[in-house]
Length: 577
Ligand code: FES
Image (cartoon, rainbow, N blue to C red; front, side, top):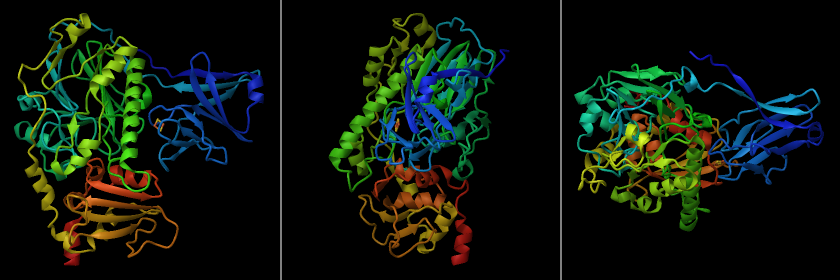
């Protein structure tokens, strides 16, 4: 075993004269030899320091001219704001903390900014790469974020979403899965599910699999909100779910091990994985915004990550104020470009041998979501691959469903014509029809549920949800398919300051949001105590807000923090009956 020691790295050294010139408030510095930027905050009593690196997607902070107290900086990429005097982000409000660096004086009154580096967990017990035989490691793309890996005599599958919709009825598979997908899943020795979002944890897919093989071994990270929090209620019978700690090798056999790491932005729910076979690493960062806080192994044999964007209700489901069609189109265009550059930079920094963009192959194909489908433009993987090729000699692979990459061949000779085997000629690549009805019927069944005969369900539901003491008033409107009020549907106000349900907006100063939701989806979500991802990420709402602020605490609660068990409607009905 290699001994794992924490090390200290000096990131920046300020000479005594520079220290004497530090001004009260915010100071920006660049280390000229590394090109890295830092922020130092000084007040009478203390100094605070951090990297000038936004937690969101690594943007650069500049002075926030709107902040008159001189404590805030603003990110040049998407306008997040950081109060450097507290190291807390103020936009989104109540969200994240910036990691602080250690500030130390040296013996000459110079100043050092230090980072304590915990060792990289994957460096424990390192293995030198061994030669791989042809056919020994094969990676087959199935759909979206689902890969089937043959690693010696073991088989591992990532994130199987192969049937049905994700996010209620908002997302559908773009690619036609290979016809043998179920056999492939059934013979897996391990299935890794990165997080609870339904394009990764697909209950319809797992339902099908569980009928054939309920004991298939599934591995998830030990996230604060369990990945399978809703398993019992889903009715899917899986008997071999394993929750593993972060940052520790899980040895599968002599040659194969894997390690699950957390996301730096959403550690409570999101993860990524390193798989290592005979010393060759396969890095799958899935959907993580800042996988493992930005510390990842370099020179992996194969890296895969998301690339597409568009996996959010913002901004296409918003209207009012600045949200004109032109603004939204322009926003999407620049955001997607930023995302491409960010991913290209990540690949450049990590220098994998091969890079594969995936996990973005969904389409809003239900006819009632035509507007979203047409406007929510996603990145093209070829564009990203071209950008990567321009900046590095990393090989890229844009897989088609059923295509297989032979890692041994590709590492040995990237020009080997058998390195990538494409699906047979004539194979259907894109889906052109989807089985909407059974899934819509399930959602629709909630509309006539008995609980909605009693208007007191509203109080019952929001009390169960447990979000309050926050100055926000929300108007919730149930709608038809076109987001017009549903005849006989509910239209009500929730004041989250004291969790009351007033007839009119309160007279005090308050932020306000209007949320229109398709009646089948909102009632299904309410009835089953589901997360609002189905509404928001699934494009099943339309939103207006005044002022135009992202209420992180509110959305984070309804998207991640709702109770783990659904409301007790049985007892509710007994008491109001
Ligand atoms: S707001 Fe800073 S990178 Fe997005």
